[in-house]
Length: 578
Image (cartoon, one colour):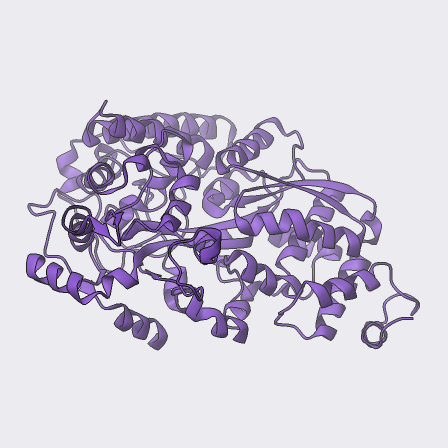
């Protein structure tokens, strides 16, 4: 017998003839057993699910393939939400999980070959400059108004997505739909920072309070303090810094993910610097054509601020991090904090919050016996070249991307799945599982108010304006897959000692310009980048550009000003008052 909820919703929506809808019973069961809490009432959830049932009827029985990187949010989608979607709509989804580098490679291969490898990708919005130029990804704005109108959820509510600006091209069109997002913030052991004996020792040595570092000088002092002065806490050898240095593609993303701009290499401007972005690529305001990465072309990839940033990464990794960190990759370094032997990390991704709130019984040494975090997260500290108004940190926005090489019926089925896993029926529960919030309504829900004390500042950050001040790679990068792969080899050569930071960044900037020159030739010959490919400046002496206002910036006489800190309690008050 049909439930009263289903009867009411069916009557209200006048879907079908009034008989029980295919998948309605399954939807009720999933709503009751899995999709709680939700920002929607149970009736509203059923109404949304019945829309999916009806819209999916032409595609029931179809089997589609999607790809994403491996983080807890996507594991939940792959293992749980695919089954829910199939039960409710009849569409089977093979949601494959691979490393980020393999995802980018698959996207690039499908774009180059026009062969349909996957029907949709959760692909970082870092490729927004690529997708908007190459026009090989489905323009979702036009798709939702045209061929995809019959499979576009009327309750999608794009304005509710916190990172929608990250996935919008220069033409104002949406090319990707956020599925999860996480910022790189500062992470530290609040329990250690609060110890009166350590506070007194730090104040005596450095002349200011031990607290959340506002600048890189303070971060370095704190790293030195815990690694060289404290050394041991409760019988455990402790370190003042954590990072990673394994020679692999994610070492490149470690730097393109705003590391240079945190030091202050880029220009003022949000969400990305104008005219020089966080990669050091220059693109003049009002133009869509990048003009260079080298200082000799007006870029900043090999400028003093960028070289300083790379030097500090290498120096801190060698001096203050656990010895094994030099061989860690992205996926190894961040969970390693749960061992409980690191005081702080300047470049910590909130995607790993779920791992860091695991119970003590699971081997997490950074929570107490009641599961309360001994750590906190805070804004990223800034380097000496940074100025107010500049981008300060990176935010990953893994976003649904459908390529034009996918047949239209498969595009529509994949679009239904993408909308399902971000729907208001599902998204709040998914956010509690993966802790990578995408909807404003979710992070402001009372369930997160209740959970906030156990999440170390995550809720406060995502309720503050800072949630959009930390931003992904922007539109200055004309072809992310081609340019991103250049970075990690050069950075790896610094860590190995083969090149100095200046030599490595000179070589990197030169190779970026060479690659962009090839893009320019292709664009001028065949309009590959829609007329928005690079148009490189002629080279001129670096001194010309370094003497101009803004980025690239001349070398500072003092790259280590006085350290500055703020008490964590005062920081939270600032967030809550904004």
